[in-house]
Amino acid sequence: MLLTPRGFCAGVVRAIDVVRIALDIHGAPIYVRKEIVHNRHVVEDLRNSGAIFVEELSEVPSGARVIFSAHGVSPAVRAEAKARDLKVIDATCPLVTKVHLEAVRFAKRGYTIILIGHKDHDEVVGTLGEAPQATILVETEEDVDRLDLRDPAKICYLTQTTLSLDETTGIIARLKQRFPHIEAPPAQDICYATENRQLAVKAVAPLCDVLLVVGSQNSSNSRRLVEVCRNAGVPSYLIDDAGEVNPEWLGNAKTVAVTAGASAPENLVQQLIDSLMQHHGFQRCEPVEIKEEDVRFSLPGELAPHAARLTTISL
Image (cartoon, rainbow, N blue to C red; front, side, top):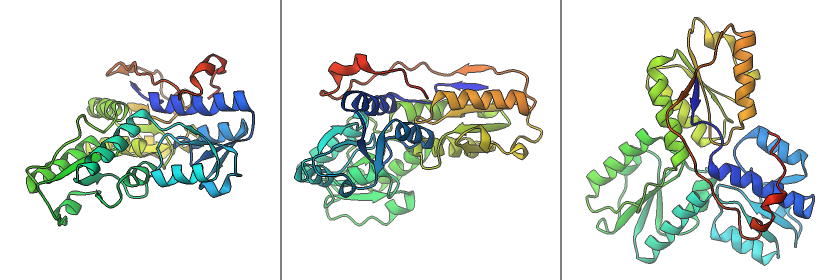
């Protein structure tokens, strides 16, 4: 079974397009702070096209052009870029920017912000940087139980955009139990793509023997797909590509479901399907569409006029 929706979300498409257009307009090298999206194959393809990936801005020559990844950055990083006269192109996903703006608004109103997310994830690091003195990170319900707040009547919660819906629901329920007056974000912070892919996995879990998720190990939303399926009692495995499939996983499985995280390119999915049919004995591929997606994000202002120059993505 091949699940839909799967693979690239609008924020990932936008981020990859940003790098490709920048390379087309300005030529190599173009520096990118952190992985533009969390997928090894995508990063390698863009590196081969002339993008130079760095961990910190200190690795970028003064005055050079640098792209911020889809996961967003803190104000401190923006200030460093300005101080070093770097030419910044911001590929932050608009849905991540939404969470940043919410943090700023709540902090200005004097709220304590409870940020639900995974420590050290690039997105969480950026969001924490918007109001570090006012924000507390929680990862589990147990973390909520340990909270000791100066003013429990003036708190709110925000979330990382790529979390497990079920796990986050439990954490939010515990927050509301402990702090009945806690304010929620104006709209859910978990992004549409994360939610839709998890719902698709839940829908097919009772119908399959194994789930294979195409995505890199550092992809939060991909890892959550594996967790959702395992929580439903079905073996699930995260793989970068078809070459990582262990035949022992398939065993006596009659039905294998295939999906992909929001930063995994479709060609890797198709290669996996081909491999399952050619080398693992599966006879046919049945598409299963749970929900149609039609979300598009506009390019950053400085690149929008050049969108027509974008060459076809080779991934």
